[in-house]
Image (cartoon, rainbow over all chains, first blue to last red; front, side, top):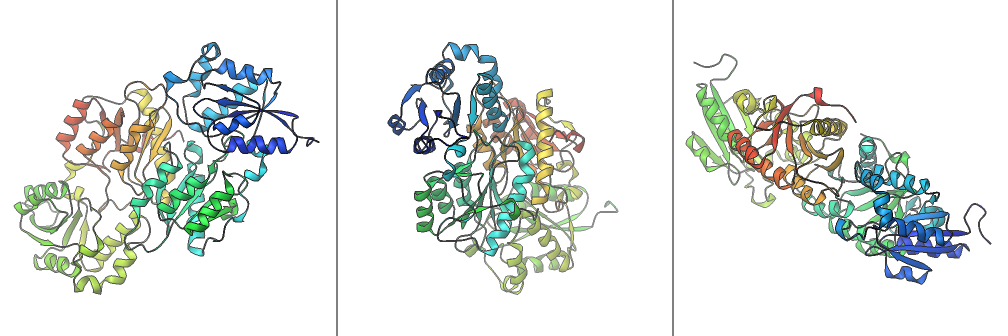
Length: 285
Length: 285
């Protein structure tokens, strides 16, 4: 009994983290037949619970063939891509064949690269679907997710952060910022959210008491959400707590929470809030 | 033989680095009588070449009295302020007296704080002058400063960086960004330029060869240049070279180069460019 808009078979091109597993589980729960193409050195071993084949990142020909042989027209490309050593990606003939495209992928901001990845797969005849189409429960809901909710001071930080992210939109750069009592402590560019949070611990203001400041994370306008939806998870909560922040605000419906139960229970334990917000919170540039 | 627009006596409130010394030297060369109020734990020992008094950062009453007793109506507030331990700043009665103002100074972005510092001194009857009014040779000139000049690829990075800095203006945040081959690698917020450069070494793109990327540094629109002009120096060159960048572009006439001869000769040695640019380079958001 498949959902009419969903495919009956689904290929899951799985990079690292728990989200590829969650997508496979959600697909099977919906009666979709899943075939995972697991990227070696990236995908979690748990992916082997599902029909799968391992490929190396450079086996572009191999992974396309794997998807075709499994008769998957619909594909989800999902999971964090740990930056590979270029000489250990195991290039195959398909890699060489597609080399001009692949080289062009490595230029420009992240968003551009991922849009090109989608175009590449579409050019090979696949339909690229977002992980959240298959597993909508991964999406951040609206409002407080755990026991704590943002206070008025945090709402002000959140709206300043959203306005800043909006201003950064045209530059195809980071998806998150940290704002504390009106001051922008950190802006994410190529280093990633975790690295950005790590440096915030040392950036507390003079005379600051207790937890303050909010991590604000949202996709850029025009970001390719099918393959590049922002994600938070337990590690994000851990880093935000270690940085002395009061909470995390993410765009509801446009940011995924990996290992949601664990992330929220950790946030409750650390006494920080995790809240889904809307663009209505924006303003105050 | 004093310049008619310059004062005959000048108080120099000296924090860390070589620029306070350069300002004192430039003032004396112009026939201005200098009195340095040197902040303990901050000012360079070389400041003792000039008539001076040491004060602790918290001795607000003491430093104001020192300036008044030395009959300095004109004051330059200059040098990098290393973040002090709040319990070791040596607060005096003047600190307590001005406490409400001082506490209000610690809120908001850097720019706001420094504008309030200027207002505070002006409120005490002083005329606050910029270091560059006394020592204009500290300012970055227009065009290449050393042996190398930016190539076309770098010009594109520079104009993208300037456009990004413009977009950040309303958020009272960082003065510098790193852009490499069109991609924004890092944006400075509260961590400072050196810390930002340090993380760039790990952010090289796949397949990158040789030096690429530019540090772009410029004041925000409306920044209080009298007390908060952006500065680069030999350490900036060192970090930019270590990060694999091709060069440094700063807004000419609005950014100071500390230890200019040393900075430029180091840049030549490391084979990176240091160039003064104008707002005309902006665009390409």
